[in-house]
Each structure stands twice: as C-alpha cells, then as structure tokens.
Amino acid sequence: MSARGDRSPAPRWAASTVYQIYPRSFADANGDGFGDLRGILGRVDYLARLGVDVVWLSPIYPSPDADNGYDISDYEGVDPRYGSLADFDELLAALHARGMKLIMDLVVNHTSDEHAWFAASRSSRSDAKRDWYFWRPARPGATPGERGAEPNNWGSFFSGPAWQFDPATGEYYLHVFSRKQPDLNWENADVRAAIHAMMRGWLDRGVDGFRMDVINMISKDAALPDGPTIPGMRYGIGVPHFVGGPRLYEYLAEMRREVFARYDRALLTVGETPLVTVEQARRFCDPEHGGLDMVFSFEHVMADYGASKFDLRPLDLRKLKAIFTRWQEGLADAGWNSLYWDNHDQPRAVSRFGDDGVHRVRSAKLLATALHLLRGTPYVYQGEELGMTNVRFAALGDLRDVESRNFAEEAIAAGADPEAVLAQLRAASRDNARTPMQWDASPNAGFSRGSPWIAVNPNYREINAAAVEADPDSVFHHYRRLVALRRSDPVVALGAYRELLPDDERVFAFTRTRGAEALLVLCNFSGAEALAAVPRARDWAAAAVALSNYAGAPAMADGGFRLRPWEAVALRR
Ligand code: TEU
Image (cartoon, rainbow, N blue to C red; front, side, top):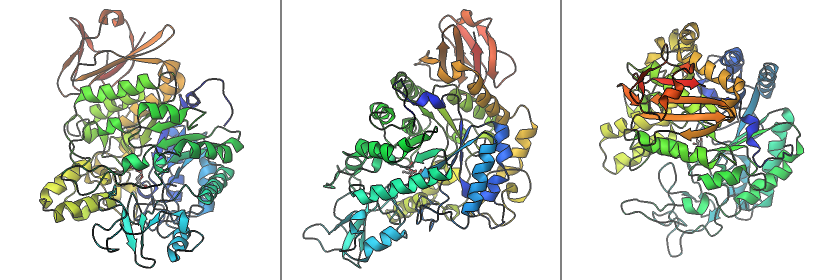
C-alpha cells in the first residue's frame, strides 16, 4: 500500500460500493445444483449494470464443506465444484476489463480438519506441524474424552465445547467454530510465514485484496484460561481470551510488511471483526497498527438480539440509530466505516428491519437509502438489490447451515419444543441469506438447471432480477442510483454526518455536509405516516429531491416534514 499523508488510508474507497457473491448460491453454469465460477462469469455484465466497483467472493477454495467453504482444505486451489484456476483467471480478467476489482475471502483463523497441515499435526505429538494448531491434554485429574474433561470451559460459536478430543494422540484440539475448523496457532512463526506466502500467491495472480474472516480472533491468550460463566449457560465465554488478543496488532503489522507493502497497487483490506469496538476499529485502520482499510462492525446487526442471536426482538430504532451515530462520529477523523445490512451470515434485512409484506419494495429501498447515504463503504449482498426476503422454512430438515443445525440439535436435546426452535430459525438462520439468487421466473429461479443444493425461495416468480431490471421503479434501480450517486457526489462519499432526531422512535434523520453542499436524509422506519420534526425544516423547503422511494418531495407540515409509510428521501441544498 502506498504511503499517504493523512492518518486514514480508507477514503480511497469512499466512492466505491462492494458487492458480495456467495458463489455456491449465485449462478450454476454446469447444472450440478451448485453455483460456480463460470456461472459468475455469465453474470459479470449484470454486476456492471448495477455499477458496483468491487466484488468480494466468499470462499471458492477446496473444502469438505462443513461450513460452506469457510473450512478450507487447500488455500491455493479452487474447489472443482466451482471450476478451475483457469476459470478463476478468466473471471478476474472479465471483472478487470469492466473496471471492477476482485477481493478474496481470507479464512486464516482456522483451516479445515482435512487440510494437509492438520492431517500432519494430528498424526503424532512429535510431528513438525503439531504446534501449528492448539493441542492440549485433558484437564488435570479428568479422563480424556469424557464430558467436562476439555482443557478449558470455552464453548464453540457453533454449539458444544470448543475442544475436540482426538483419540489417535490422546489430546484435544481447539476449534472456536465447528469441530471441522481447527484453530491455527499464530504464535508459531512458520504458520504466519505460510499464510503470508499464500496471500502473496493470490495477489501475484492479480486479486485486489482480501475480506479477512474473523481476523480479530487470530491471537489467543497463550494460557488459554477458562472464560467467565453465566448461570444457566453450559459453557464458559472464551471471547475475552481470543478476540482482540495480545499479539493481534503485531501480527497485522507483520502481515503488512510481509505481504501488502510489497505491492504498489491499491489493495482493499477489510477485517471481519465480530464484537469490535469503535476504539479498536480506529486502531485496526491506523497505518501504525492494524493498517486495514476498514472493518465490519457487528453492533447494528445485534441491535435486535434478545438473549441470543436466535432470539430476535422487534427493532428499537432509537437503539439502532444510536449505534450508527456512535460509529459515524467515532470514525469521523480516523478509520473508515464498512456499511452493510446483509451478508451470508445475516437473515435478510428487508424481513428483519423492514416489512417484507405489502411494503417490501418501499422498505427495501428505505434500508438501502439509510445505509448507503452514511459515510463509509457500502456492501451489497447478492439478492439484496432485488429485495430478496427470508424463507419460511417448512421443517428443520430444510436447513443446511451447520450453525443452525447444531443449535437446533442442542436446543431440542435440552428439551426445547421443535416448533419453537423452527420459529427461531425462520427469523435468525443464516440459511435465509443462502438460498439461490433469483434470476428469473423460470424453474429454480434460473439459478440452475439441476437440483439446487438448498431450495429456492418460492417467491422467486415475483422477486427476480429479470423483473427488477425491467422495472425502472424497482429496488434494483434504486440501488443502482445509490451506487452512482456515491461515485458522482462528494457529499455522499465524504460529507460529515450529523444525526438530527435521536429520540424519534420511527424516523432516522441525518445530514451530510461538505462546504456549502448539504444533504438531508429522512427515513420513516414504519408503515404509518410520521412527522419528521427536523430543526429549521423551512430551510429545506426549496431543496431538490436527490433520491426518493416516492414520487415528489414529502409535504411540509407544521414543524417538519410529513413522511409517508416507509418513505426515504434525500434532499439536496
Ligand atoms: O463469521 C464469523 C462470526 O462470528 C459470525 O458472524 C458467524 O456467522 C456466526 O454466526 C457466529 O455466531 C465468519 C464467516 O462469515 C462465517 O460464515 C463463518 O461461519 C465463520 O466466520 C467461521 O469461518
């Protein structure tokens, strides 16, 4: 990365929009029911029409697929189900030819248990790669392999303990995700060097950067101590001992030296950092520390959590707004925000924060407006631009995701009512985001001529890309306008953010200003009319509509603007 005068390297991506592709569910060219690289290749013009600047590919590497490719068995190849390295090169060239960049998913907190490194590591206690993972004996006095004998009390994100007993050598290995995802030991310099070499390999191939999976978890407290416990919870909380760990910034500085500093073209680096705080985000983006362009924060997608991520509550808009405002203000002079509602881990935003019934189109556009007119780099997840919705899964057996399935299994074993568990997963399962992209009204939504690996959402006849591209008033064209506006309008890209009505329960109102230019953004997060009582509303009476999900500006009323149901409007002065 080239040196820059200012503290924050990120404004480089201020005018850019990123599009996330989840390859297994995007487009299937060979009819095996599974998306592939040639399928994506057939849709690059669609991406160009949407106008996005950067494509992020979720993992395409060889994988036994315990976690849909986030369990990698070979970092240097392409899984044959996705195609070949030659297909990859062709896709990269096709994107570059259209002025788009490509970033890869970098999943280096853990490998698959079927990676050759782990196969060697587990083969014997004296193997040269033993120390590449975390191997520990049973708790003193406990019988190895028995319940409660795990080296510490941490639970896995995907249910059960974070340790798996391996009878071959009589020890346990650590996996903070599934047991098929053993954690790499970054304390070992050879591990780090192997990862750096792999990263250089992809950059030499021409990729433009990385989305770095759970990168804030790579440094663990070497003592691996027990975590705090909560009454009623079966496992301790390991998070304080492995999120934002002691050597994290040192590892990132080394990665910058060994990898990124060797390239003089613009590379995009975005850290996926669950539980990250504003302070940490500033540090991640500081060239002297993390050196990343930006990180994904999670607070806004946890705003509706009840007791857990599987206990979603109706959104309290004030809480959501306070989170956005804290992040906007906290990264105003350093660091840079990543802006997202949807990704492959989140239920569909229009179902969760909007209204996927009668107001689906309007509320999908509102969510897009509220997010894309913030300061930061927006990410669009495949299908979001169609207004794709959650799925009404008929039975637990319809779910494919390891997190959802393990959760259901554990909850039901503990006595939960299966119907209640299904209801929880309908709202919260990651599979809501993972059903096939809806291209048209033909069978399987035009995703595949075979049998899709997960069922298509039955609403594809109404909600699909062919329909939205043909309709100038669609969610797709609204996203297209937002992407274009960000590129053409420095107020959108760089303007300062100020929130106006923090206590309003239904209206999200903010301004973006830069010199004499200003935008006023008003979003009514409800299906009823709402008064946006912004201070000095009259000053905006003659303002032009820069973008709206209704025809015409909202009516002025005493003390503000009268917003229609789910109305989202940006006024320019
Ligand atoms: O996710 C990290 C993560 O912590 C969560 O967002 C995750 O989705 C889970 O729901 C926690 O409860 C990343 C990837 O995006 C995800 O798909 C992978 O499963 C995970 O890491 C492991 O690689």
